[in-house]
Length: 96
Image 1 (cartoon, helix red, strand yellow):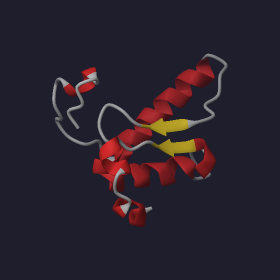
Image 2: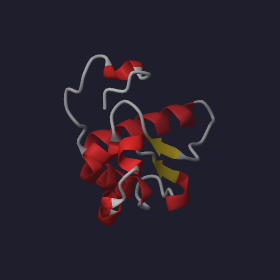
Image 3: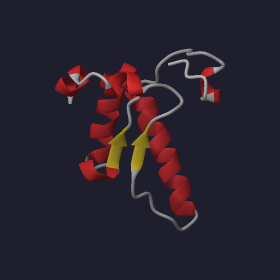
Image 4: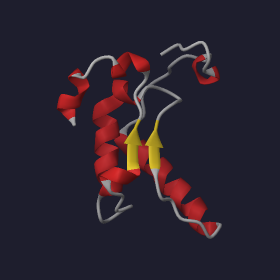
């Protein structure tokens, strides 16, 4: 998105993550939490790229993570936080 306040944009976008890569990150984080005696309670997609520009992969990952085989996260436990650019338009809501 190129926001001036975000240090992660300074290197530029290389590529979007595939759904499987997003799920792998979740599984890694969940494993680390369990190893330290903690449990993941919420999942937020934001920063380090714009989730709405990779919406198909993000939604596929969310469905997998929310499924009974992986995380069983409910919709109230998962937040997809768009940037101001996407909050200004509701056209992306049709995909959800």
